[in-house]
Length: 212
Ligand code: PRP
Image (cartoon, rainbow, N blue to C red; front, side):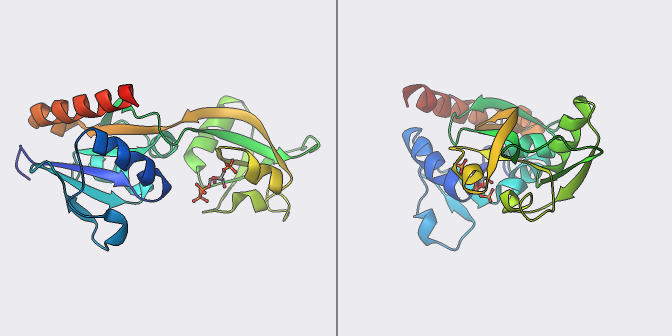
């Protein structure tokens, strides 16, 4: 990739619907309608900037290895991935929610190891270790809220937004692990080699965040 060409990896799904209008305000507009295309990489209104649209959990990987220079991804996935390999210069303040522990309403104290179901296994491991609590981790990929009522786990670690999913499944939020929002990350080598274009794009995005 030429030093003047910039690839930005965006998280597909609901977050994209919030992120694209912000990019539009920053005058970075996809050349075609992303939602109507099967393509995964798109030209934009800026001739030297391309947008990739991939799963959020893959954004840190692409940016870490420099296949994408920049990325937009939730803080939850950054914490789960570990973020030694990139900078995190900007909070887009979009898709805001909380990463929390949750347990059945009125759950009794568990004797012995707490069984915790989550897809955020690294975050859960670190959090409970810091609390000095021994746990048994159960990795799930979705519908975590079902695990306690089905007897699979005592607690879950998951994203909470309105709290409606917890309530609908007889759970209540307990401890806050982290505030989550969409962040911009930048590959460390790209920041040096492509400094001018990255600073330009970051400046445009920062102005869009401040005006929104
Ligand atoms: C997240 C999370 C909860 C839900 C919480 O799932 O896993 O299930 O949102 O939102 P609420 O507090 O407003 O009810 P999401 O729909 O993002 O999909 P996921 O299952 O892929 O995580």
